[in-house]
Amino acid sequence: MGDFINRYQDAWSQRQTNFDQFMGALSNASSIAGAIRDTAQLLPKARAFHIWFEHVSIGTTPVLHMQHDPETLESRLKLLHGQFWG
Image (cartoon, rainbow, N blue to C red; front, side):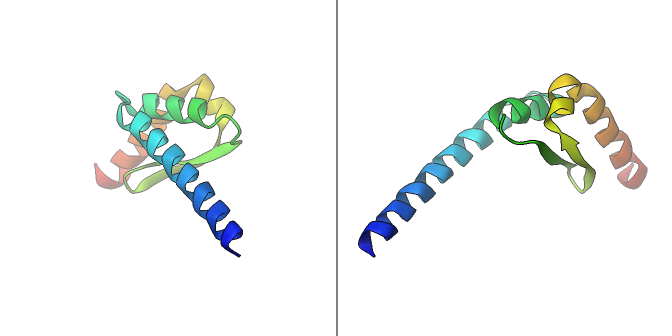
């Protein structure tokens, strides 16, 4: 049982480290489009993400779209946000 717990703790620690590195990279993004692009590059195995800006989501977005045109996705988020919270 002790081996299992140690392996679990090690795996959890590694995931936390990866998460912290990911969040650190995103916090350095200069724009929403930059954060979208960085996310697509930092997590290449993911197929899609739910993209949020404050209380607004543009829904499930394929990583390919996030890599190809993050500026358009940023515009959609801001437009939708403005419709509700002007």
